[in-house]
Image (tube, rainbow, N blue to C red):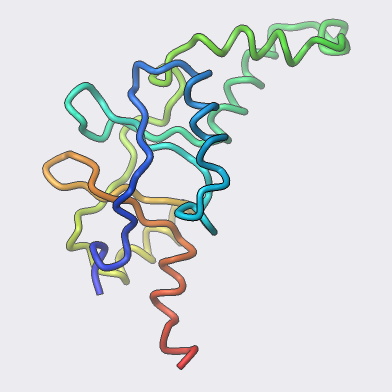
Length: 154
């Protein structure tokens, strides 16, 4: 079995030039989508040529919010509108400003065992699948587990 046998080809992508606000709206929109069932939310980031540029995960956005809060005093952090101000400061930034660059990816012919090793070693939730640098799919760890263990349920 190979990556192409279990990848989801309907990949939600976002441009590296999109705003963080657009990214969060897209994450919210896709959160209830059945194709993302048992998948960790996140976005594959593409460049102007449709090639893999990075990934943007909820933790990445939360990290950006926390980092922007470091410059505030404890008095500022106690204000009721503190998080609204953090969001206001972040929403117009570009995805490329905070995305994780140079994500690990695999080709369609990657072997399942090699994928498992990547997931276990790096604790990934998803791995983009590329062909000629263009994203053609994504593999999530839960469907990978089900594919690997299908013989257990026979």
